Each structure stands twice: as C-alpha cells, then as structure tokens.
Length: 601
Image (tube, rainbow, N blue to C red):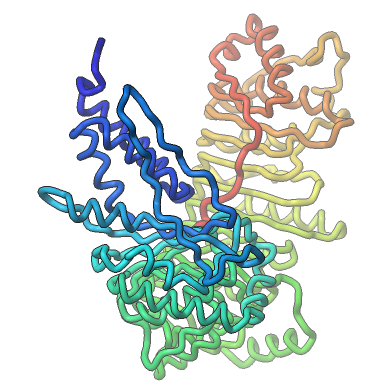
C-alpha cells in the first residue's frame, strides 16, 4: 500500500494549492483554515507547503450570534487530534443578544505561532482581510476584541493590502439607500469605527492598497474605510472602497495613487485638486450627477485644459439617466454656444486622455450628447455604453474605427422609438469598423433589424441580447467572415418565414437545409429562446435551422430544458447532414452576456 508520504512532490503541491485556494479565497470563512492545519499535520513536506498560505494572511471576521459550530475534535488511530479554531471574541462590551450584536474572530494566534516557530525563511504577513458574514459589522468593541486576541504580538508592518469582504447582499439597486443610511448611524457606531480604524492603522502602518467586494458595502464598513483612507492617504496606490465622509486633508493625495473607485459626492465634498489627474491609471466614478464636475482632479492653474496623462481605464456610472430639469437643459445649451471646447457637465475645461484604452459609461445622461468628441483623439480600444436609447444614440460612430471591443446596451425605450433603435443599429453595423468583440443588447422585445451591408469584417465574437428573428440573424452572420463565436440570447421563430413554415412530421418539423451554407467560420454557438411559450415550437425549429446554416459549428450550448429536443434533431439528421456529427452539445442553465468592460482592471 502506497503511503501518502510517497506522493510525488508535484502532485502534493497541486493538492495543497487547490486546498489552500478554497480555504483562503475571497469567499472562504475563517473556520476553513482548520482544514489547512489538518493538511499541514500530514508530514513535514505538507507542512512546508501549507505554511506560507496560513502565514501570509491575517483574517478578522465578524459573525452573528449565536456562535456557529466549529470543527470538532476527533480521535483517529488512538491519537487525539484537535482541529485548530480561532479565538472566539465578542465584539460588544455587553453579552446581550440583539440587533447589532456580533462576534469577532481572528487567526492572529495561529499567525503568531507560525511566526515564532518557523525555521529558515519566514513568510511575511502581506494581507489583512476584514470580512463579515450574514450580519452588518458592529465596531463598538472591536479594539477590546483585538486586545483580547493579542493582535499586537503579530508582526503586521509587512501588510501592504487591506481587503474588505462582505456577504450580506447589499446590491447596486440600494446603493442610494446605503449612502443615506450612513448619515443616520448613531455616534457610538461612528466612534467605534474610528477607534477600529486607528487600531488597524497602528498595527498595520504600511498599507498600500485598500479594496473591497462587493462595491456597495454596508454603512459600518464605510465608516471604517473613511478614517483609514485618510490615514493611508499619502502612501496608497489603490483605493476602491466606498467612503462615508470626504477626504478632508491639508494636501493632495500622494502621487503614488494609480487606481481609484469613488463616489462623485465624496469627490465634490473633498475639495478641488484632492486627486491630481496626472498619475491616475484607473478611475471609476460612481453615482455621478448629470452635471458632474472634474474640479477634484484639477490643479490651481488648470482652468482651460485638464489632462489625464496616465489614465488607461475610465468608468463613469451616473446616478440617473433621465432626471433633468428645464433649467439644466437650457443652461447646457447656453454653455455649448459660448464655449468652443467639448466638455461634460458644468466644467469649462477641455479634457484630454492621451493613453485612454478602456471607457465605460452607464446610465448615460443627456449631457453626454456632445461629450463623445473628447475621446476621438484618444486611443480607446474598448467601449461600453448603457442607457436609454435617446441618449445612447449620440455615440460618435467614428470611435468604431479604433475600437476592438464594443458593448452597447439600451434600456427603457418607448414604443415610439423602436424603429429608431433599429435605425441606430443599422447605422452602427453599416460603419467601417475594426471591432473584434461586440455586445448588442436591448431590453425591449422587438425585432433587431440588420442592414443589407455590414462592414464589421474583423468581428470574431458577437453577443446579441435582443429579439432576433432567425432570418435576420443569418443575414447578419453571412456578412461576418471572421466570426468564430456567436451568442444569441433571444432567437425568435416567426411562422411567416417560409423556410420555417412547414408541417410537423416529427417533433422538430420537416426542416430542410439551405442550398448553401450561410457561414463556415462560426465554431461556437450559444442560443437562448425568445418569443414566449406560444412560440416554443417555431423557435426550436428556428434554432435547428440556424444550426444547419452554420455547418462549421463544433460546440453548441442551449438551455437544459431544450437540450433533448436539439439532441434528437442532431441524431435524426446526422445521416443527411454529416457535419452535425462533429458537434459537442453542452447543457447550460444561463449564458452570461455581461461585458467585461464594466469591470475595470
């Protein structure tokens, strides 16, 4: 019998890496580290492989009361082994149970033991993670809790990354409510967060990166993040945590800051020039008003032009796409007439982005009608834009000449604008373009039309998240010679289309192949159905007919509920259509069509 100690070191290394990723990953609870302790006890080799993973991260976790069960002690082979569990620390000064009561846990004791008893090269603690599961954190007794855990014994001057993880489901839809709730927190909560921030900054003074997931964390974490951001302000290179209060300081943020995600109202309240534009490489502004001001990025002498010399990725998420007053409208017209510069909002400066590669704008307001001209001279390669058709339609089509990734998503269109949206899509597809990956998405259920001539010859990947009749889809695909991957989220079967209007001799109908293939370049095809339950059979027929028109397909993904239907069609038609034999059929529950552009990195 082969002993586990005889395993090849490479195999052991892979086992340990997989286990450690699961136990120290961003969604792992603290008690999963007990699994790593068990792995480390297998042999000296396993111990040496596991130790860096245990020693490199300090976790402080907030959990609701009552206490969750911990891994129990076990007795194997006559030897008693006790699974490690972190100290249980009540985060409140009182023991009563009620709203806001939580328990703080930490692996500080384990980290300290590893630091004390490690022989050879010691692995420094590089990450500090604050996380909360199923409850909003209460920092009232945080400092006392860390004192009880003897956090001071750990050497944390090597920590450079602070991560906040929260798993209580605060969604984007309630971001405004969360922001409003910050101002209603009682003084004890604010004081507790300030004291906790002081404690963290004292023990880990060299933090360079502050990040969080998801973006809309609870008000308590925002109260904590604000004083921490001020404490680390002059040494941070990454700040992507929402703050509760402005960045009030006597000087600018250090020139080391290269990545910033921040709410527009925090920028506005922080004052002019708080974030110099020159060094920023990634910028995302959340909940921006229609007349967003860039004052926070401008130095004292920059009145005519503001240059973001190093910025490569810019994202602006507007708070609203339709709340515009008559006064705002006429004010914008007057500014446009009096200024030769193309600007945004109430700024008169000309904005320059000489290195901008990625641009994402969501909930596009009417104030962006002329602002797209600013980016014509920039080397923008990826563009994502979302909002009502009435505002999105002003995207300057000249940008298509330099783009390789394009995502356009229109929402909330009136019925009267349906034909206009079709015209907008025709205009886009009829423009000369070097786009290689594209998402064309619309939330309303009306057909997506296609121009007779499509000039997107370089397109290799296309996702259509709109109501697309089968023949219109094939007309489009037939003009895309480089297309390799096609995702259709709402394919429609129209009974009036002659090719699909056939008698039902079999469950899939008597579907004849076209005289010639529409395209042989498509290798991966993913299809959703559309048209509702009454169109199920025509739509399934449409899916099968599209498959026959694309004989180059080697991988086909459809919803699980329709998989058997499509499989039967493939098996019954394989003899007359040999290309179907080569298809790998994949069952799936949901096809993600979200553009990666909306996650700036």
